[in-house]
Length: 152
Ligand code: B12
Image 1 (cartoon, rainbow, N blue to C red):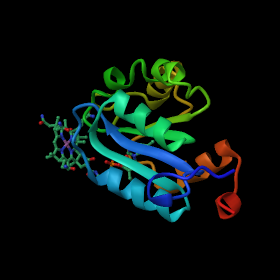
Image 2: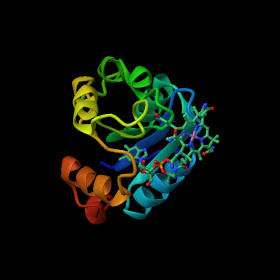
Image 3: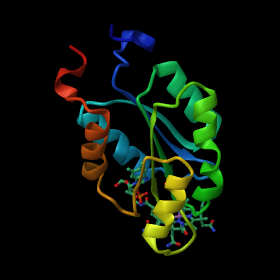
């Protein structure tokens, strides 16, 4: 059974994309939207200045398989803290969580940053400037599906 979203859209491969907190950096968000849409995902883009609750509400409403959080302005750690727990409370324990952008202030050892975000419940964490192709390939692997046959 394929879930149907607003406007009769097939939401079965929906992913939620947005920029968390008081962060207004919009360019990367638009690029990710374009790249993931082109790769066959049904992108639900909640845009910039998005709260944790907005990510969760969008994921619940669209039966999303993944939430992709961007943070550019350096406050990513504070803004992302507790998101996984809120996902679990909302019944989204199986939703894949990715984070990327300039997640922390300044240039820090990425392995340490990655560990801190994984400890917060993120499945994958991306260093500044990572190409969308890498995360698209990872998400296809993590969701274990072939987009081409997903909506059939
Ligand atoms: C343009 C810009 C702005 C514009 C934003 C305009 C707009 N509405 O978009 C303006 C001037 C408003 C701005 C403001 C600020 N900015 Co600014 N900004 C930039 C700048 C120059 C470019 C950002 C950009 O568009 N990059 C291009 C896109 C394509 O790349 P991207 O955003 O990194 O996204 C890609 C990847 O990172 C990745 N990605 C991103 N998110 C995710 C998520 C996932 C899940 C995955 C898989 C991948 C992924 O994929 C994207 C596509 O390829 C950067 C410096 C830089 N060179 O990056 C600073 C920068 C991000 N800004 C910075 C700062 C500090 C600020 C301010 C706080 C400055 C201030 N004191 O006011 C404010 C914050 C305002 C706010 N509330 O958000 C810092 C952040 C530093 C940090 N993290 O430690 C940076 C890095 C500059 C610097 N070197 O100091 N900024």
